[in-house]
Amino acid sequence: MSTKRATIKDVAAESGVSIATVSYVINKIDKVTEEKINRVNLAIEKLKYEPNLAARSLVKKEGRMIAVITSAAAEDKVSLLTINPFFHEFINGVEFCCRKNGYSALIMGINDNEEFKRIIKGGNIAGVIVTGYISRDKIELLDNSTFPVLMLDQEKTSDNFIYLRTDDEKGAYLAVQNLVENGHRKIGLLTGHLWESPVYRSRFNGYRAALEKYNIEFREDYIFQTQISFEGGIDAVKQIMPKIGEMTSLFCASDIVAIGLVKELYHHGIYVPKDLSIVGFDNIQNSKFFIPELTTISQSIFKKGEKAAELIYSRLNNTTSPTENEYTMPVSLIVRESVSKI
Image (cartoon, rainbow, N blue to C red; front, side, top):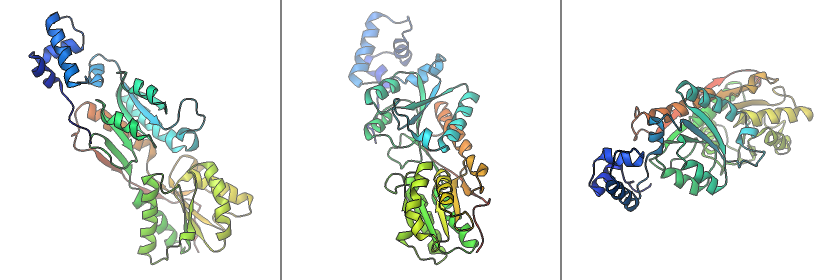
């Protein structure tokens, strides 16, 4: 947690002037004597006070941008946006809510620290939504910022941030429960690397909880880890092929990895759901366009994007409590064609 930041009230007390006078100096309004300007500036420097640029921007009708930060640098061709359609749908929800409230959404894929610092401190951003992994130094910079910051699907690291997650454990439980209700007891898990994300760990926990509930043996050789992408699903076939015929079903921790897997299995003469039943997670648009249509767990991705932007907007307008900072999106099972009854 960060230390207490100086406020405009502290600056006023230190310089012996009113809060209004400090505000005039900060906003360069020509109503203050040179002597008072100097006193205020000295107090700002002494207290290391950082004006709330987001609030100033809103008053001036400037800086009405909510930035969505991803982990890719500008020169990279591969990012979260290119490997998983989840983020397209999420950002559509963010943009819709921003536009509805008179804001713009800015997509930022930045790894360079100096560039990141320049943009964050530039005064044009009203709030930030962080998707995926960012480095500790960037988190510290955001922790000391004056605008609201929302962490998407992240573990809690600071009371200053807003956290928006999905009920991943329940979703995984529902996926496995659906397989069990269709007669399956040899149920595998295809997931992202468990050390990478709390999302994958929560879905793993839900998978194990369902197995335990239905007295099904947990087998480590039924756990497969890969990159969460279409290509990751294709690559996972090499791991999964030796278990085909023994393992009757698979819970995939993401729709996009399930789609890659199903396509590559087809090229090996393995058909879903005839030879292997599959349940995905996310309910991306592609999951209902695919053959077979994918049974999956919906986390209402567009609504999740809307909710993220709404939480930033509410914090800017002081309509939510600063201490109320953890939110969870509900999940539901969507039954389609990729699970067979045995």
